[in-house]
Image 1 (cartoon, rainbow, N blue to C red):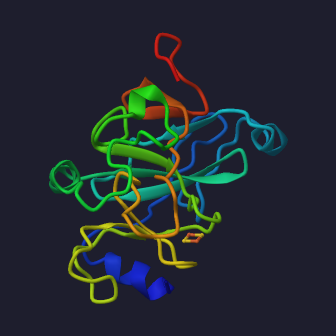
Image 2 (cartoon, rainbow, N blue to C red):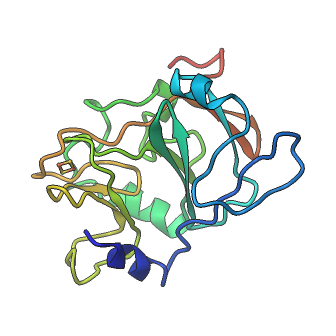
Length: 199
Ligand code: FES
């Protein structure tokens, strides 16, 4: 899928307005890719948790981070999207995420802790391409059944906005939801689970 598709999606949703937490928490700056000053690049590559500030994440907006060398998406889903997710499961391959990878606390219809905030590893579960964010309804190139989601340009796998794979595509399972926890209402740690919650 071309970048044109992403551009078109901006008509309905902002795609990325990225914030980075400064080393001493002095504020926010726009960068092309979310990064964190702590821990070090070497530690992150080895699997250290990363902290994400979502205080500026607007409804409909997707931001990107990196964890263990993989892209991680954080999406703020509007109520209309949650309604679609709750009511459009017939054409999904694994609608209740029985065969897919996510922590137990994200094994629900929205695949998240908070319904509106979706967090996923941004790699296709077929061969690892990075799907594009396509939140629009029924765009010309994806057809009338498309309710918004992520589309993998490599071999045409589609996922809804809970990362659930549609039936009949090469990707075998839903997008992976990484372990994560909230340390405040607007700060998330990717790569850790609350001790009282089972992963
Ligand atoms: S890698 Fe995504 S469909 Fe093949």
